[in-house]
Length: 497
Image 1 (cartoon, rainbow, N blue to C red):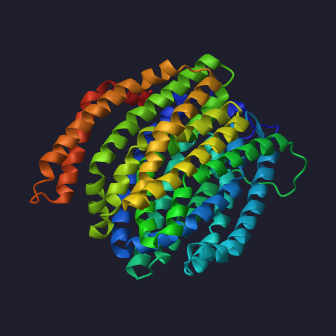
Image 2 (image 1 turned 60 degrees about the vertical axis):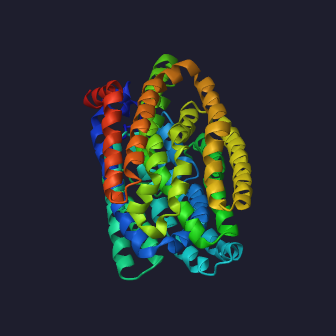
Image 3 (image 1 turned 45 degrees about the vertical axis):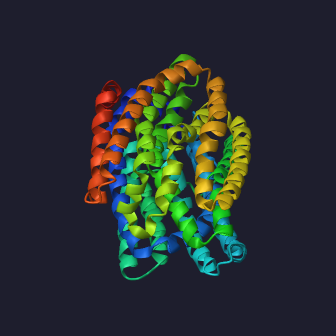
């Protein structure tokens, strides 16, 4: 609720927001993310079998452009809304209308660029698909500020449930369209239903409404901060899309379909864990920025949680990737298994990587974030080109690109980026490593157990792949729960406090 001065005050968050707001909503967030994973598995299993890799390849040609334009819709203003200690109703209204103007501009840009995109990929079907998907910019723009305010108030459980409900609705609509032989348009319907449902629910859950009459609102610092954040987002956009652009340009759409879905599946558990985490990290760390000791304590606690969840996922994915793709998509998607395994190594650092932008933003270092993101984009772009060239020489170009991403992330990109962020906030590398060690050792032990299970069951054709995957997951969960029990108890106490 706004104060009598028309502001969303800093006091709307308690002095220590983690024990209260976050811990109250953690059960809802975790449950919603587990539900999201289950929904994803069911929806993808049906769509993969109904559509095959081709439609996903076409979507993979269009999505880099759409994701680029979606960065422009927010303009970093959503992050600025969360990061600011004080945000007036007038400022929020101006930012909302900025989003609408940017959303309309992005629609026009997508339509104008559609023919050039089709020429680049040498695929005429890209034109109608791009034009059709351009309209998703409107509901995205309408919901951006409301989602930011929900995040600012740490209503993370509400936001997680909204996104889960939208995902379910989009999945049902996509499956119905695919069963009606809609082809690639099932994926278009899925995109529209999801973003429209999110917009409607966000407006229902967040009572704030933008003002029509706008006066000078003092948003220049917000726009400056948002501008740097947008530039950083553009650089990070390159890190996750240059590979797909290269594959779409030089290989067939089926190859892009296999690669893009392997990449998306690798990122799915990362996003499931990190999306709710960044939702609380930015506002909580921003409020604690004036107390360096408390700030570092909070930050290291966040890193401990990331290690606890992401390490076993990364290790397990490397081992069971082939089985997972066969279960999800059948024989037509078997080529994505090695790609998913090669990409799985990056999961070990991807969770940390994805939150470091929020860490720098929380202390107002948007300019530093931009410089770092530019260096990262250049490094990964070069790595993708090398990976594609080596892969073509070896007869496995998509595998070369997948391997180049993991190697570059783990060896070249993440270590200096993490060191930069720790130095910026006054945290020591030794303290950070201490948070990781228990989960790392437990994940290593789990990996050995799962690998042994896989080696025991894989040579025996009598064991169905679904049963083998279920056994591998069960062994992994059981072993990791035993080895990481101390860390798990810490997390459970966090949720009960």
